[in-house]
Image 1 (cartoon, rainbow, N blue to C red):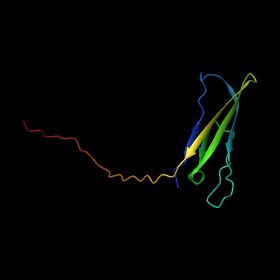
Image 2: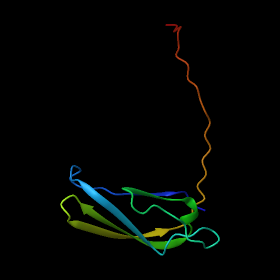
Image 3: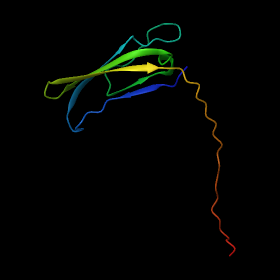
Image 4: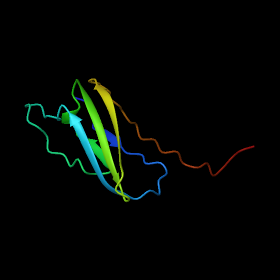
Length: 102
């Protein structure tokens, strides 16, 4: 199993008013049982849960409708590969030195 995957829209210039975002993912993300996951595909950014990022290739497209009624779209293929990344964190506290010998 992989980590969740954040898909981020980036509109340039950033001050253009956006009316709608519409993400499309093909094939549709499924859980470990093969059931299609319910995702809100009309958000500015899209988070694919870890269950949807198993070994597979997906095609993602985003259609953005701007305040003036014009639309723009972008599509991108993504290859998802399983990673077994593990991290160990050792908390450390560093206290300030109050007496310094010279």
